Length: 428
View (tube, rainbow, N blue to C red):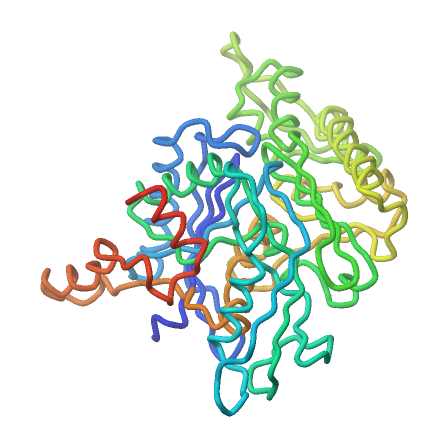
């Protein structure tokens, strides 16, 4: 197993932290490890307790490590939230090689040139996403490496985020004993897995309904045009069940996942179950039909807010419709309700990999796919650093493998510039 081909994604959500270890071979991904731990350190998508978040990260990483017998040192981290901003950018450089062949260092220089913008001091550059390269006036080039030219231009989107939110996220990863191999915008990453090329071209809204927030990202003309985050999600459904049936949050979450139904018209009155209530030693019996009367109104409200938000972003009709993903759309009937509320073509996005065939893992798989594409496009090293824990290697060997974590050179060209800046400004 080649460690350079192994990627580890870290998806920190309000209701859960998910870690996926994947091996890229011949351009295809094989999932070899999965970790999932409850998250209690976030509220509405924002970190409110660093120690709890660190504990959740460590639990998820440990679970994934035990599946494959590997020790994870670096992870690809997904970022999300209303503090994210996107704006157009461009850069131009002269091809440096004497033979005029465009190489990786030319790509790096034009990417750096595109970041020369006036950015407020409280914001940090997360990534630059190329939309096209231009070689000596020839437009529409996806990958110019190997081509001959004198002038190399880049047009793309620069993504920035609030320093405070990003540094808190990185602090959690660092305190969990991990390094950041790459930082990716979650909606962009999820789009690589959830959306087809035609859907991105025609126009589509990707709706990721999480525990504490719902992320809406609109793709058109092959790229993400806008995104928005609503502070409402599956936890609100759980809270409604807890209040309505006078039960604990844990019991309400269990009932939602195991017995819930989101579409009253298709819920069964014959499917019954017992549930504990607060202040009562005896259990109460409820039917799936009764639970649906609590779940449907709240999920319907979320979908109506999504529809309104897409309209506010300036998109009145998207030929590709809506694509649902995220843990909170796993409730039976969610797809049927979405089609009824949104009055458009709607489908569910589920990763097609063994062990992660659930919408909740879409972002985690997307982070690996997106980072792997960055390696190919930008020539950056983002493969995760892992070491074997199966062999009885001497302690000295293990320390040698972990030494780069302590002696990291901030000018190492293998690390992304944005990661270098984060650690240089915040951790050193």
